[in-house]
Image (spheres, rainbow over the protein chains, first blue to last red):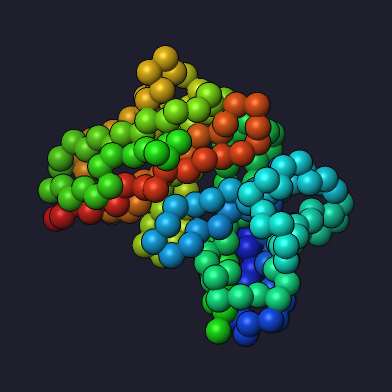
Length: 113
Length: 109
């Protein structure tokens, strides 16, 4: 039973390019959370999704960032026109129910040149 | 003031010592998690608590809802316990988790 799978592990982008980060939750999990960890800072909530629905995106920057969790396939966090300040580790976590234990992916380290 | 405060920020212990990491929060919560983040960056959820106490191996987690405080204890600490330990609370009425800044633990052999 594979855990939460995130890819790529490392992603390098130049300023202005798009970054697409993927997260496949654990089998049977329909709740996905995205978090960002800036260098030397704690984790910050970005968005909470269920299948085909964005439940809470209060932690997402208003521009350039979007997330989806389609009926089929992984959850995608998309960052358009990346800037250096977007460089961070992006973690995805999934749970079976709303108030259940979280299982984390290994993260995607985004570096913007 | 952060809504979730952890102490200490850094902790160095000798192998075999009993370790306590504290977490205080100022918001209403529906759940509290203790997470472990290793130097490679991976994050593991150790406990999820909404009341009382939980034990897993050498790890014990307690929560006092009235005092808005939780502790993580490690008995007979070992160098492999060296990691960052993070307290995260789920803000009640929302789906949002708020994270402490973490306690960096180093256990020396």
